[in-house]
Length: 145
Image 1 (tube, rainbow, N blue to C red):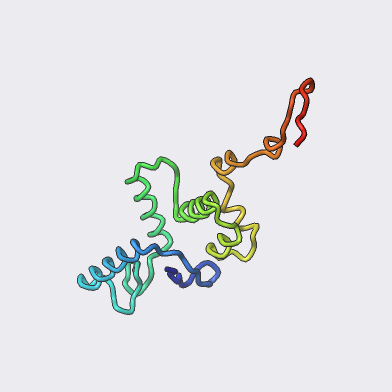
Image 2 (cartoon, rainbow, N blue to C red):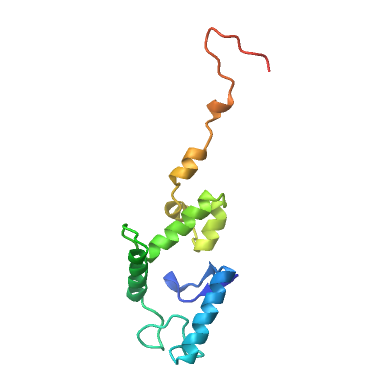
């Protein structure tokens, strides 16, 4: 399923992938928030300090940092770290970079290439064209093939 993200960078909307299991959790969150009077029927899924406004960038950053600390992740992280990791994992799983470009909402492939830096796992899996050649020592005969 795709989730439409309003008011993205540059005032554009984005589509984000939403796994079925996460959709169920979000529905539970919405129901509980409605029952407790925290979430309004026409309001934001993640409201800010005021129910009429969405969560702020600063609040989101704080949530991500707290989650990283709870998971005992020692690296410095923020919301952008999730985006970078998402792109890198897709690339490592063999997803075409042009598909990743669309998922990230990039106009230029160069921007996607920056976010989806090639990870060590991918580099190690590349087979050199020389490994495919039948290389023999100079004094050995090369079999016809």
